[in-house]
Image (cartoon, rainbow over all chains, first blue to last red; front, top):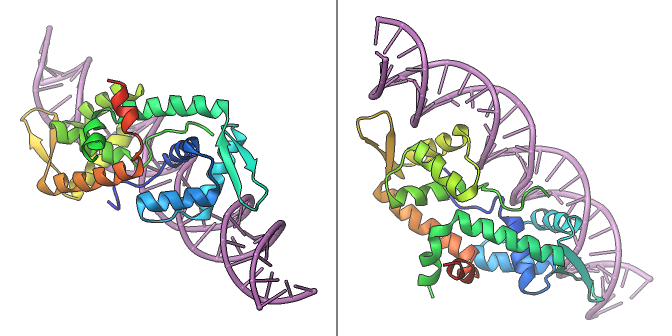
Length: 103
Length: 103
DNA sequence: GGTTTACTATCGGATACCCGATACGGGTGG
DNA sequence: CCACCCGTATCGGGTATCCGATAGTAAACC
């Protein structure tokens, strides 16, 4: 038993959520995850996820002119987020307290 | 992009949580997940997880005499659950609303 | 006793996830 | 102009995860 709580399978979901708050670049996302998790995910982890979300038309590029490429949710992406969140909550439905307590 | 929200990596965590509520058997767990998720995980999914948790001494068998083998959390398992839950909440820290709203 | 049923358990294989290394490209500063 | 940084991007590989199939086992019922 290594660690009983890595990100497998939920990274895509997490990225979708992060971008829904405000447009973010790949680097932004890596930093935010580092803040939350303690370790910074590899570029080879984040960019393929971004690519997949883009190909699925869940996110779109926002060129801010600079070298950083920000992404924002599309309409399709917003719908997907709602669906995915619903599934997520259904799966961990008994965790309200764990979230609300620490606040 | 298949499904952006499977259980990879969190199944162990989920099982630990389920067992923490009340002692459960492998079959109990499969049924509860079916209730939450809609699809019933394969035996080959659940039992190895149980085996791993047992080998890590996070859970212990409770022989109720019958053929069903219930599992309960050990002290070590309870500590692990606290730690894992903390990590989980840190990762999805902005989801309080999604949990509390639907209630 | 023998058959059926339900749960436990394991094994092989496929998958997709994530990482590390590496390359590319555009600003920036000397 | 050139060297350096920093963010983007891809590729190959290792690995944990999950599934389907199959076998084992023990109670339950006739």
